[in-house]
Length: 156
Ligand code: SF4
Ligand code: SF4
Image (spheres, rainbow, N blue to C red):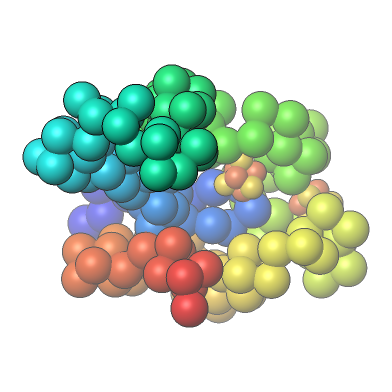
């Protein structure tokens, strides 16, 4: 039997939040790793020396602040149902207004203006229609368990 929270990881648009790089903490981990490497080499202690070779290092403080910004903004996400992602997401807003759990319930799905930009979401919604949400969420959960992330698709 599918546990409740797997189903809850299905976003309104059909994306599976459990497969999202941000939900998986990939950006936070990347920032932490970069900080560890900088510290291990001790670069942070020799910024003024480095700036003599490359003036870009004069902006080291700003770089640090930007890294903080990435961690704060993209370090974690509570998932779509709990308000994660774009706070003004039109798809979520529209689904909620219509009382749908996902766009798979909507007759406009194939010609929806909002979904046009999200080919992956549309493909997932088609699968959800065929498989049902529980089976689809279970399939996605298994893929994630085997290391799958939407981020890998972007990195191709
Ligand atoms: S916030 Fe919008 S785009 Fe992101 S998973 Fe939810 S419905 Fe999809
Ligand atoms: S019109 Fe239908 S398919 Fe498009 S966002 Fe709204 S609920 Fe989803």
